[in-house]
Amino acid sequence: MLLAELRGKIENKQAVLGVIGLGYVGLPVAAAFARAGFRVIGGDIRAERVALINAGRSPIEGDEPGLAELLAEVTAAGRLRATTDYNELKPADAVLINVETPVDDDHRPRYAALKAACRALGPVLKDGALVIVESTIAPGTIDTIVRPLLEECTGRVTNDGFYLGACPERVMPGRLLSHLRAMSRVCGGSTPETAETMVALYRHVVEAELDVADPVTTELVKTAENAYRDVQIAFANEVALICEVVGADVWRVRELVNKVPSRHMHLPGAGVGGHCIPKDPWLLAHGAAGKAPVRLIPQARLVNDSMPMHVADLTLAALQAAGVNPGQARVLVLGYAYLENSDDSRNSPSQALVAQLGGRVQEVRIHDPWVPGYQGELLTLAAGCDAAVVMVAHQAYRQLHLPELKAMLRTPVLIDGRHVFERSQAEAAGLLYRCVGQGNNRA
Image 1 (cartoon, rainbow, N blue to C red):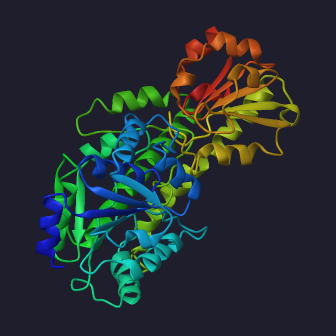
Image 2 (tube, one colour; image 1 turned 180 degrees about the horizontal axis):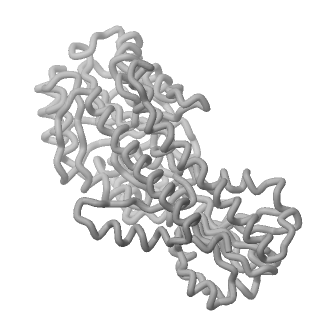
């Protein structure tokens, strides 16, 4: 099939789409294209997830406006069907790959899922189909890993037997559908014609600008934008630590800094989590292949990774200030997701905090209104605890009545890693309050 023929099928919605990986990215993508009128076949290795989707039920339990309703609609209409069998992707004219792309402990990309997807897709890939990698990958991955694998597994040549591109997602849990629709995308095609065909496809679900580029530029754009955020957050965290030492309030400093046009100091806090920011800077750095100096990115990663340890130190110091031996203390961690109002706990700073507190306090309890396994009754969990540590700015915590929390705690200590509360509010409730970035933490 020639590109012109494929583009015609895309424009009149006759193209069959495949989506490999039905997680936080792939599922809303599949549902959105199905709503646009395409027949979509979703592939995932998790049978239980496939069963839920085919029953019209969303496996994503966070606050995702519209997703559950949309999924029920498109599955009932027969426009989206999920499967664990790659053979069912044979009719697909375009296949979007959305699988995890983590990094190892040595910060090198681990592409086991991506390689497995390519190897499984190759033998069933339709002649002339378009393959688009939406996963975030290191610069050069399309040319050095994806292209050779697909050519090997199909026995065909790129731009002849199949077409190839990259279009990294730009969504965030809690805003999956709205970001998919409203965020601009970069369509990196192996040829300009391939990129334009990708634009024609995404135009059915994206209302924002669609830019064309080559794959390596596209890979750089996505990894650079997340590395930028990581570096900016690290700067805010360093300012927060300085404020604690000199006796200032980083939240007031940030407010005043941002009154200057073109300044946008990011939010400091208890750490950076999720599937993207903790790894994408390493993917960007990996693109240098040791041939260019990379100094700022690793240092920013170190700063942000250290923040849960800093919260642990604040907690232990506050317990001692309250006259409690940390080794005999019970601590309640409020929030286990990495993001407010989400059930996504990938690389959660709370995981690091719990690990830091383990062995240093008697007991750590965890509450999260969204994460299965931690959805107990908050005040019941708080009973008999010597400190509550806010790690996630869930709406449920913003609505927490602090006098009720204080009444349940054995020792009235509140550590705020996200500035959910004002100091005056906490102290009026009778709580010993410590907040990241506030100078009287050491008083």
